[in-house]
Length: 213
Ligand SMILES: [Fe+2]
Image (tube, rainbow, N blue to C red):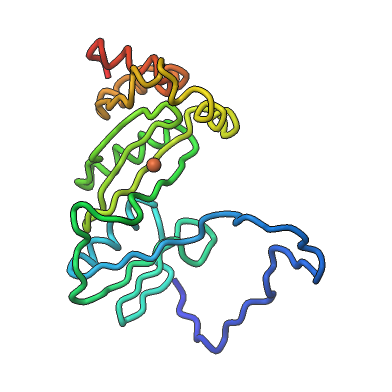
């Protein structure tokens, strides 16, 4: 990357996305997206940076010598920041607060690619599950924060209706959250079993029962 003298660079435009003149916003807006996470770390700082860089196929936009690394995986300036906090304590086992962060991918093929690549780097998921609404691979970063890589099993609006009307029904609850074997999932996927089967909660339960997943 070229080194640009900070005094030589200024962005051209302010807020290029949209300008709302006064009076245009007349009702309470919702956020457009989750922009970034700040994560405190200490002795695992470097390992944390490495983990997120690898998991997200990300780039490091800025490293501040006082212990801030800005990481991004798209055109935003940062998505995750790892912040060194010398002497900070680990979260207790039974803590209150954010349970995990979840990142959505575009296909089962992508999710499986991430799994296989992470495995070559020594990162194994701690839980692989079909929740009904989603297919999810959970990892733990070097400090033990959970990161879910996932896929909605249906289109977003169908998934919403699925959760609203079916996910906690008696029929669903009887099957629960089936944990699947990630390597068996890879094998089935690579042998040509369609996504419509591998993402389907009922089919996944059947395959697990048969020892195939
Ligand atoms: Fe989740």
